[in-house]
Length: 128
Image (cartoon, rainbow, N blue to C red):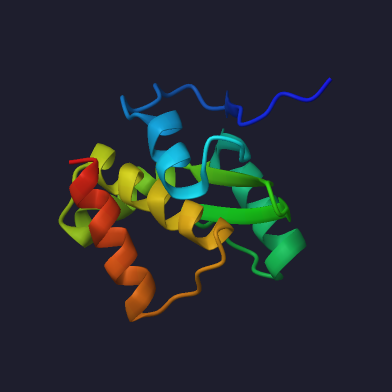
């Protein structure tokens, strides 16, 4: 049986999930039929994934993996998000929301560019 448009969140950290409208943001950017998995990981787990798929022996705050036209996975190192947030003059929750939007836009097919930055700003404004 297929569930259309679900958003599965797996928190493998001891931290609390920020209070964000994850499903609403996902639906606005990717549509309600898109099946998304969001995994919150510790630095060690994120580093393993980054090494395996990108050849980088370090953690990173977010990774996006399109699985098909209508499904994808995002992994987030919550500790890295917390430590990186001040570098972007954002709170943890603000930066987490920004990264989630950023990851969704990658799943939609955007690459780093001024066009992607405009889209990020648009969605940040919608969900402010």
